[in-house]
Image (cartoon, rainbow, N blue to C red):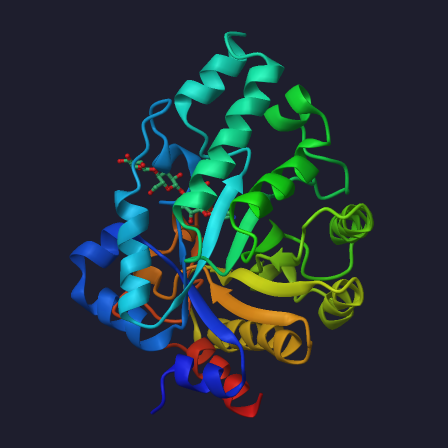
Length: 322
Ligand code: G3I
């Protein structure tokens, strides 16, 4: 049977996965399956700030470059993740801000240099960048991160301007979770994106992570949400889809999970704005979910032995129909 990426090509959308670089190095089945099934890859961790600049001024691109090479060798596009986040920051940065040895002016310079250096390093090799990740709370207020505290809300526009200057062709995305449907958080993004674009700030995409759980229900208004961002002239993308469940797994839960994956995919395929559909890992063997949500898991398309679940079939059928 045709792999996902062949069907996605015909549907004119990229089908992507987050990639665990340890698994890519050590696990032959993982390597082969990643190459066979996906036309887009995202670094699950190795392009984050703590990975690329573990000591101040000392960059380590080795793992990220290895992913870019893998992608090139297999005809895959690369999504960049992520330039500005409150999490997975290097220790030297958080410590320096906390003890006052890095003041606001210096922090702004550090952020400028980080974004410029990383985007330039990958210039021409990344089609979509998650520039700004998870900046709103669920109630639509800005997250109280070191960025907001030290720099004020203008750090968001600055980040997009700096990224655009470093690689004018890459599409630049906002990205967050709990923004699948229309709610306070996605509306905050819609209003922010509208304001930024009216001011000429280069923000071209809205990334919807898509971390769902069958116990929470399927979000409403997903298509309407995509449509309103399309109305701003923006691209949209599902960037980190997985659908967790309370363990143990049973057939009914897997069937429900399949409808959730399919629901997000159908919203993407039904929107002229939606360019890529990325899952946050495709095998339970390497999923982040059980480590963070105790008693939950089985959130991906294949089990720990790479045996496909109903969700995999649902994506195949959806792509074939789209
Ligand atoms: O790098 C250390 C390593 O040195 C150490 O040996 C090992 C021992 O546990 O930990 C390693 O760091 C882990 C890192 O992943 C790299 O594997 C961290 O503990 C672990 O917390 C981290 O988790 C990642 C998480 O982001 C951090 O917030 C997950 O793999 C990754 O899937 C997850 O991805 C995020 C997206 O970037 C943004 N959206 C939500 C999504 C899920 O949380």
